[in-house]
Every structure is written in structure tokens, then in C-alpha cells.
Length: 213
Image (cartoon, rainbow, N blue to C red; front, side):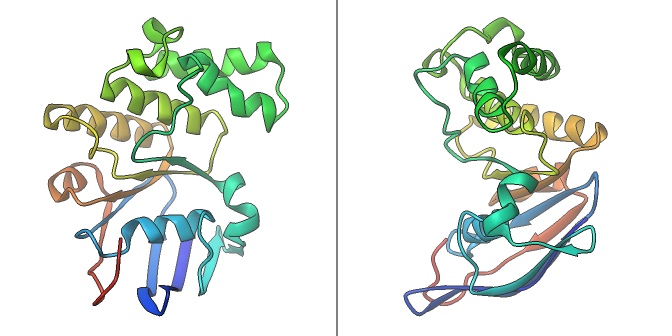
């Protein structure tokens, strides 16, 4: 279980996050919803250690942690624009971090990738490159790449924003499938309809005057 208490963040004197508190229970989905300018992405970046919070308390299963030094170990992040390496195939995108960071052998990394490709319906495109993929396929590759590092919590920044509306249900089904498999998930979204389909908990945030998302 992840708990965040009294998280604050300001940029250039503008308060973006004001004493934000939240809990993400194991094997559940928390959706953080709100309009542009409410600081949703900043919140996600502070929790995962991509930004430094001004203040706040972070605990995982009751133990305090520092997102700046331990965030990469705890969280996997699926970015809004996917951030896939364009010069690498699907399989290479998934296996790169396990080989470089976890020091897995090529065979072990490929074995792990094969399981994820099977689970996420990527077997047929595993040798293709990002430019050859649909938006939904890129989304699944980004999820597989994050899961390959075995994060304790999988985070998404606006997972439906780069997709056609008819693909939202596909993403929702995938998130629910991962939840059934025991994956704890934290989702940033402006899409309330989507959030209501997948969330066990909803946290609504509002924009602070002069704040930026």
C-alpha cells in the first residue's frame, strides 16, 4: 500500500500542489482526475521521483521512502507520449532496461519479454518498430516495458489522451486485466468516464489559481 501525506510543490512561487494526501491499496486502481492546470502530472512526477517535492511524507507498506532515490525501484511509468525508442523493435524496447539495469542475460530478458508479449497481445508485432504500430499497440508496448522491471506500482500519465476514442475501452479492459493479475495501478487522467470504468478509488484535484499542470 502506498500512502502520500501533505505533498506540496511550487514552481517559481506558484503553488501547484497544496497538502495532497492519497492512498493506493494493493491490487487496486486509483485514478486521479481533474482539469488541465490542476497539477495532476506534477503530482505523478513527485510521487515517482521525476520531480522533487517541496515537502511531504511517502510510505510503501508502512515504510518511509525517498522517491528521488527509490522511485525507480518502486514505480513503473507509462508516459503520455509512450517514450518508446524509435530505433529499437518492440522486443528490444521491452528487454533493454532488464539487460542494462537488472543485468539480465539476453536469454533471460527475452524470456521475460515473451511472457509479457503473450499477455499483452504483442507477439505478432514483436519485431516491428514503433513507427509501424498503432496508438493502442504503442500503449501496450509501453506497459510491457514498464512491467518488465517488475514495479510494485504501475503509473500512467493520461493513458487515453493519445488514442482514438474507440480505443479507450481496449485500454480499460487491459487495466482491469492487470488488476485481476495483482498489479497495483495509479492513473492520471482528465477523462472521468474512463476513470469510472477502471477505478477502485477516485481522487479529484482542482486547479490552484495560476497553477499549471
